[in-house]
Amino acid sequence: MRELVRLLEEPRVCSYLPNEVASLEYRIVQGLEPERYEYLLERGYRRFGRQLFRPQCPGCRQCVSVRVLVDEFEPSRGFRRVLRRNERIRVVRARPSVTNEHVELYNRYHQMMHRLRGWRRDRILRGDYIESFVVGGGDFAWQWMYYDGDELVGVALMDETPNSISLVYFFHDPEWRGYSPGTFSVLTQLDYAKQVGKKHAYPGYWIPANQSMAYKSRLRPFERLVRHPVDDEKPRWVRYHTGDPIESETAPVAGAVRLL
Image 1: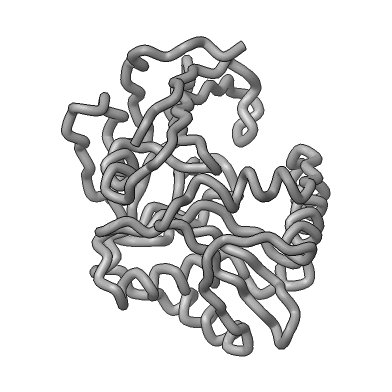
Image 2: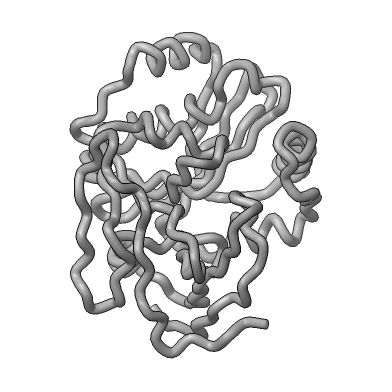
């Protein structure tokens, strides 16, 4: 892996908790190897396109890095109900790509989320989609396409490292919303991870106060990262139990350039 630059974002209003101030640390990289990527996942980083990032918010610690213990995970009764309700859905796993269907589906999903939850208007163009979801993943990036008959109704982006999977992003047809598509997508990916012998699944940051993130607390058992360590520091993951402290801690950002 070659790191081109490390940036620290200027504090801004948080997209998930509007009363908080957010700031992300970014690392722009080339040639990210699966083993190195897993090393960074263990230290709280996420990937989006060519960027790796993790929170470095000045006064808030509510983004909690979590990972599901794949071998111990068993779908609850509610999860099994979701699986039954989606038995008609066909899943195709392939390398990330883009079609007009992908772009239109992404835009319909974001229009729905803007209307329902006040998400920022985010209409994507084909080139932006490629930059966000197709490039930067190397040999470890996959997409899961969900079909109802011949109609594409959902797309999940997933990364696969030697011992883990990382759930990158998911969007779906608004008409599928009543069938818990997000939960269904997570369950299909966890089932795959178990079949191929992965140890961990990284579903992204858990923010208990954010409704869109609440489902992650049901993916038990899971561990949380106690603090964001520097690169050469061993990460400390602990099993989460109801009532445990949930705030994470940040680490100093060495060599970062302030991004204005």
